Amino acid sequence: MRFLLSASSKAAKAAATSTSASSSSANNAAVQTASSAASSHRAAASAASMITRAPPGGPGRRTEVSWGQRCSPVCGCVVRFESTSDATTGRIRTAEYTARSVVASSSEAPGGDGALRLRPQTAERKGRPLLTECECRTLHAVASALTSHLPGRTMDAVRNSSEFDGFRSSESFRRAALSSMGLTPTPSSGRCYDLVEEAFVAAVRGYVPGPRRSAAVAARAAAGGGG
Image (cartoon, rainbow, N blue to C red; front, side, top):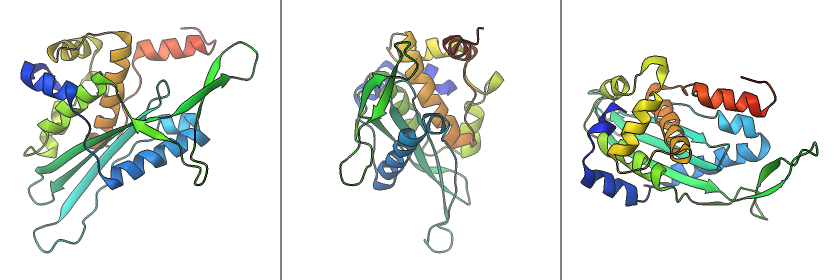
C-alpha cells in the first residue's frame, strides 16, 4: 500500500475515472458474497479469503491464483481482488478487481428506535441479490492504482509493501494516500479506502485486518456499549 503515496497525478486521474476489470469468476464470487449478505449481514462483512490452485497448463506453467473480497456493511459494495502468479518465480502475471453494489431497500429495524436496516433486493426467479456497478470514485481510484502496481512484482514484495504496525495503514497514511491521488479525505472516502484495503490485504496476505480503533469505538457506541 505504501506505493500509493508515489502515484503520479496522471496515474491518479486515470485510476479515478477507470472502471473495474471484470471476469465471470469474479462476478460470480461477488454474487455469492452478496447472497451471504442477504442471509447473514455479519458473516458477509467478514467474508474474505485467499486460495491457490494449479490449473492445467503443462510443465513450467503452473499458476497460483490469489483472491480476497469484502462486502461493506454501510453501502453494500462488494470488492474483490484476484491475481495470478507464476508458481516458479512468484511473480504476478495479472491482477484485476471487481466492484459491485448490492441493490437494497431500507426498512425500519425491529425495536421501535427508528433505526433503519438494508434489505437486498433479489431477482424473482433465482433469488440472487441484484447488483449494479459500484460508482464510488474513491473505491475505483484506489483499487485501480493497486492492481496496476502488481504485475511483474513478486507476491512477497507486495506483502511487504502492505505491512504496517497493527496490520493496516494508519489514518495519517490514509489521508496522505487519498490526497496524493487527488481525492479529498473525508469520513466517506476513508470508509471506501478501508474497504479496498481490507479486500486487498485479504488477497495478498490471507487475512482481513481488524477495524480501526475509531470505527470500533463508533460501532460499540452505536450498539450502546460505550467507548
